[in-house]
Length: 90
Image (cartoon, rainbow, N blue to C red):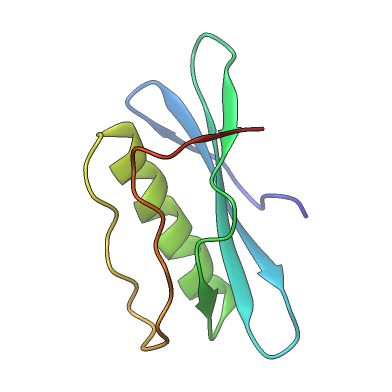
């Protein structure tokens, strides 16, 4: 599992990840702070393609940095979206 690219957002580094699970892609994001703290989102849901998974992971990471509710995924599959207040250490 490795991020294809990184995005700088408000002083944070967001690394969206799409894990190929065969019939779908699982979205995840790694968030790096300027002070060196790194945290990972865990699985954010299942998506039909890698691009959708990465886009959602990036949007989720931006919402986390902004301390707001995460966006709803555009993929019609029902998933449990973790709340922005719950953070896991990487």
